Length: 636
Ligand code: MSK
Image (cartoon, rainbow, N blue to C red; front, side):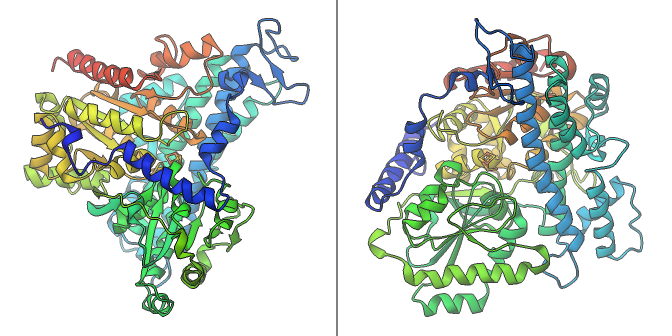
């Protein structure tokens, strides 16, 4: 096995930090602020906030729990306060992901033949319709799309019943959810009930609050997020393997650079489309540019990379870097994970900071409200604005660090099954099977898998945890599936390069060669963690075991957002032990810590729990150990 340090295609965190340092030098010249500076200004953080022991859900406080003051003014103890905060955190994340899914359902409802939005995967649409008992025979594809969209929208507020997608889980998992009282009902109901439970004078019993946290999380992962993923595939196409590039070096010196950032592909798809419009390219050339280069940041980058091979400029903590290159004509955002800092930062350069959603309004931005009904007009106006801005670029400030790596992305569950099918020629059904994957794990050629997800967080040296953990797992013949900003960390480093197989253990290397895949599989954006849930569910069914028995772990080593907590809750509830590199503000309560991380809480309900470990080396060892324990329990 070669050593990573000898691989000239690997981009190290040191190199990325050098590039960032050179960009910050440019920033200093123009008086730009940076997250690095703001972290210093905010340190040390509030100890009560970090432990989750501050309560401000009514105006009698804020109350802070100390030895001297063990209860808030209402009498709530530390355990109730920490658990309430945890549930509110989850509800925020579940609402956010789910609202994204709702917006995609609305877009599907507006899809029409010849319109801005069309059905790109009619087969998937029909499969979902059948799953939901919607008649497909003899129906016009757009009538069917509207019916499916409407049925999907009803999942948000239906008065009775549970989420339709939960039926995709193995029966055993569904039984566990029912028994624990956490099967998600209407998506909005779970968020709303979470807010109700945490209102002053409602729940203060940690167990009840944590149970609802799992339920709200499940309404995201097996509800709103799954809606977002599935209906995005119907509209924009189900991802298939495609080659792209990643890291800040994908910005082009001689081209108009438009950076798309956020989450909802309804906007970015249109920007990508109009950036290829010959009229816009001619306009760019008339201003002296060689063309138009669209690249992505955060989860929007994942969406457009997986469907069009659009390069990925960076992840969460690189969003300021794209502006600092001095070569960004426009950074166009929709919703979630967007730094308000982009407003003032863009003013230090010629960059247009374009906000588009009433959900994410920010000072110092150009606001072009994006509507599905006027998508073409809005997207064209945005692209035109960026192109016309090329002439305002100050060439003296342009600095694009030459760092970029090759990546093969686009591994939806369908694509993974197709890759496996290509090797075994099994043709079990129209979608293929995961049985060959189960077989190589049973045989020990692969020891297991880790689903690595989540953000960057300045509390962890950015990208280090993602990259170092992945390298360690690959060496140990553990395949890694990734999404969100974790996926970009891998892509930026070069771990999605087909040649990265050279650095895996012998077993994983053989699988990569045979199946023709990189050792780290890009499964999409943060809503696409729902793809991982389907993968785990299908694998358990093909294997004939419970999800919790599969040698599989979840991991979010650098997470930061409320969405990540919601994700953690549905991943654990699905039966997957999950490792966190940042504490979810729960350490202030032993009772809540035991419920989340011990043997007597959620582990009893859903057969999995959390581990919080800030030492990344140790976390890697623990995941490998957990995978080996699961193998031993299965007798493989
Ligand atoms: S964008 S939630 S920083 S993964 Fe989905 Fe990245 Fe985390 Fe946002």
